[in-house]
Image (cartoon, one colour):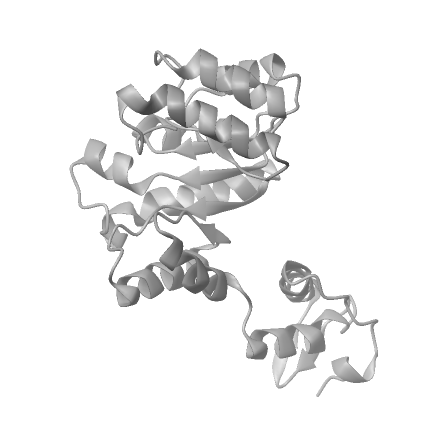
Length: 244
């Protein structure tokens, strides 16, 4: 209901979202930012349905904490970090009780910094800061920003690959056509799953798998890979995990 909606259409967008949620559908509602003329009504409607809320221009942990209180904790929060101050305060933003994960707003941040929003080098530091802040705060890994080149599958694949390498586990989409490629791009490959199955049950001590040293941190990473696809983890010492 934020930047994608013209001011004259804010009310109807809010009503449409409410109808969708009332039908039993699931959605994350991106409300207008605190301080805007539409924030109060947006938040009240979201609280009525207890849906997850994406908060744009997230940079003040006290504002986020107040939203949690006002929604009685019924609305999990996804702060959209898209300002320089938000990046600098990323740890505090992610640590607010009620925040489940953060999202990265590359277009708005790039506009503030005076750089191109598709420039991976210019925004690489900010992206890494958000990944680190999420891990330090104990929330889920963050969601990367948008690829505005809707008709360019190569640009989308490149963005997904870079985001995944940095530690993001999802991506904001601006067109339905982007969803399949983003879903596939963030899903572990068959080779990654085979590796994870072999390593996950290697035990807590140091060993080798396929000629590579494996210790507890490597095992934990393998278990995370399996957890992302909901796959049960093999028991230590099972045939799938024989070391070599």
